[in-house]
View: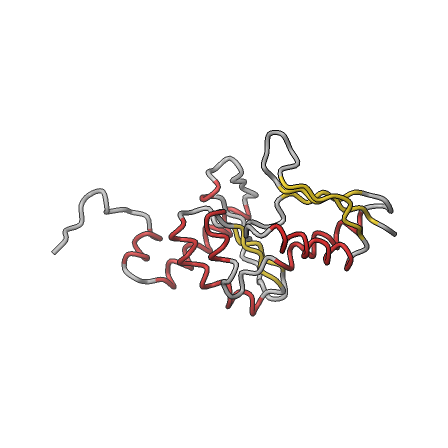
Length: 185
């Protein structure tokens, strides 16, 4: 039988609740801490990214949700299963994850990114004047330049842009794939 060491003993109520399997209590403790930080207008930008609080606790129904994966690869793989139920509630879910996992996550239910790319092109059409230029770097990480070229061309046509240039490795110091789109109307 394993014995608790002093290193595992803590006075932190949240950790105690989690170790006891009292997840409802842990959520209440977490929510109280979030409300306290929000009421004090506390910032966390100077903290390591994986410790920053970015969600206010507001309802997600009908909202665009951006999920950031900053912990290990295993955590991302484990928790991506919640993207599907989240997607059923939110209007869209965008997952920002480690590049090594992109091929795996591309097929995860609810972890769509296609609507993000379309939204960016639509937003660019809204804010750019005619003849304005949109440059897209690294459209996807799936490794299919032909598929990326076809999708960018379709998105450009859908939102009033012409693809003026496509260059694989168009930069001297960066291996980005660059697409140059010009607004037509």
